[in-house]
Image (cartoon, protein in one colour):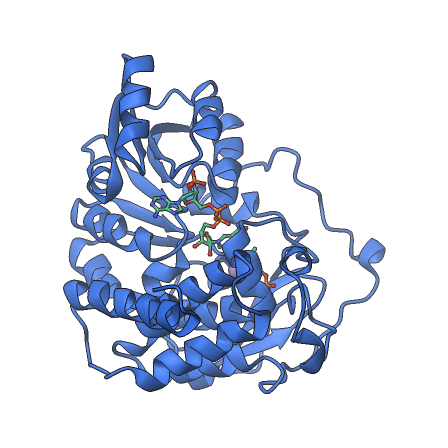
Length: 383
Ligand SMILES: NC(=O)C1=CN([C@@H]2O[C@H](COP(=O)(O)OP(=O)(O)OC[C@H]3O[C@@H](n4cnc5c(N)ncnc54)[C@H](OP(=O)(O)O)[C@@H]3O)[C@@H](O)[C@H]2O)C=CC1
Ligand SMILES: CC(=O)[C@@H](O)[C@H](O)COP(=O)(O)O
Ligand SMILES: [Mn+2]
């Protein structure tokens, strides 16, 4: 029996993890889980998952739950996340928190010898230089949940070697794939939230529309698979059937295909190196799909992707600035305080204003993340 801690259980990935676990109760048990502020959904989840340890974001929610459920241990805040991610009975932490908030529990879980199933790509973007050495030092497994990275992991069969020529990350192009740059000026939040192929949380859906998601994924791939930025290519593939590909030195290309369903990469991260049936999973029929399309991304049209390559190549503190500024600008767009194209504008301005440092510590990353958020808020007149 694999004992799991699910961070972000009330989110899109978190709920799909619950679905996977529900169908394999002989194999998996969620003994700890966290929610942010969605206490209604947490309480609904508690009716099917009887976790003994639960963390929420706010103290008052924790006190409310403590009064109501006497047989559960409740925790709150970042400290609480660290506590449940490091419990002695946990084997693996599935981190499905969105954003920078996922970093601290991941680091502490590794130091507590837990395997990590990582959906929270922001962890690797901002702190890959700290996380990867920690994974090696503590001898734990880092299993990708992000669909493209799971695809690559499946293509290379979990083995990391020097025979890869390049990684090809596929990108749907997001909600506005067919719009020109000038048409992007006044697009609505509602339209941005309509992803063509995936049903996901709001932040990543907006990131997918700007292509910051793909930019974050380029950095995530660099750390996970130890490849140079020159050897990571992004390919627009509107159907999201090929989840990514690996090209080898001898020109062979290996791809992983499937109908878009995040429960597969979630389940594979939990069952690796084995494969279990995916309950309700729709099998791919290429004859039904008919045609697949591919095109090179236009780096002018998708300026966010150019910024992400730039931040990744610069390294050090720059990815943290890009990520923090993007998280803040993404939130402000969702609140209708800024326009869609302002997201990349403020991210770029933050990158230009930042005093770069090499190899930032965790404490420096926390400061830089805060600086980038405040920079964007000030520019928008929010502070
Ligand atoms: N959704 C998808 O299909 C995919 C997602 N990912 C990545 O997985 C991660 C999660 O994405 P997704 O599930 O879509 O996101 P959601 O917004 O749907 O869920 C996020 C989860 O994190 C919790 N949360 C948010 N902020 C905090 C915080 N400050 N402290 C503690 N908990 C917090 C939320 O709690 P609450 O809602 O209760 O407030 C919720 O449980 C992201 O990094 C995303 O990039 C990667 C590939 C695909
Ligand atoms: C499902 C998943 O992994 C998302 O990150 C997805 O990749 C978003 O799609 P695009 O960023 O390609 O639009
Ligand atoms: Mn992805």
